[in-house]
Length: 230
Image (tube, rainbow, N blue to C red; front, side):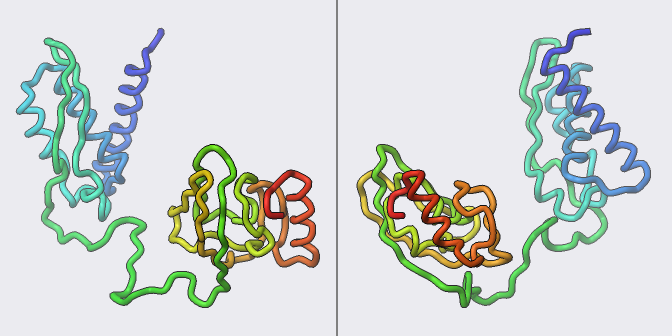
């Protein structure tokens, strides 16, 4: 039996939907993928039965309520869309807000949500900081994310590497700084926290940042490999 990628995806949806139906029958509240799979499977089945489009949309919006899913799941699923196979051909079926309000009160918040106090929070409070000027000597933009050990970033970036040892960009997680070729840019850095053990990156450290001789060894590695500013 040879199955196309679309047919394999359909089987995956069906399997996940059956998993969700078993949980629902046992009174277990559904997770995000389980809820999406159950709704999508019923929509695809209805399309194969050539149920009218409007009836499928109405049916899909009544399958689950917030009582059937984990807290926050309904807010995570603003829309479900599938490509149904009708007699006349394929057609995209879209259902907005597919999980209706239930009878039980819903708890505030979302799974994994970080709830902070209603006051300003200072990022990286109390850590050492430094500002360095960086020039990109390459021929294309270089972007550095906030998690990167700045000492080990692209070798074409010219700056005082020693001053940035053990530092990272002073930005929130996931944010970065872009350096365009030939344009000097000042960047604020903050000391890396935690255990301060650096593995990977460019391989210039591979160990504790605060170990005796770590900076000198890293500078020697950087110079040998052509990192500017080392």
